[in-house]
Length: 95
Image 1 (cartoon, one colour):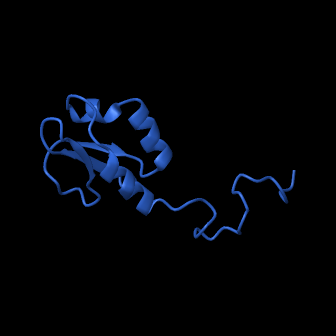
Image 2 (cartoon, helix red, strand yellow):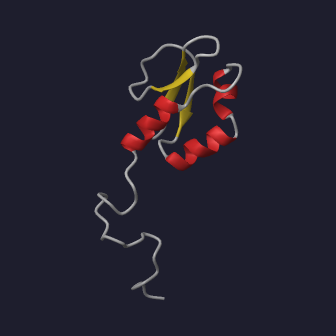
């Protein structure tokens, strides 16, 4: 579970917001999510946060989205790969 980001809900009533908890120290029920924007989008589309955190309605995901954008590195930029090279590319591989 080290690769997962813990998420908690903060606020009350209609003012619920999703807050990232990377240090895993905030109190309350938590949900875990891969720190990836695609996984976040899927969870949001399925309305998984409300069910996992047992809150009514749909909490505001703005702070969580900002955190994920800040920690997510686009593929091929600073991960050591050659510019423009895709790790799934079959160019130059023996058959």
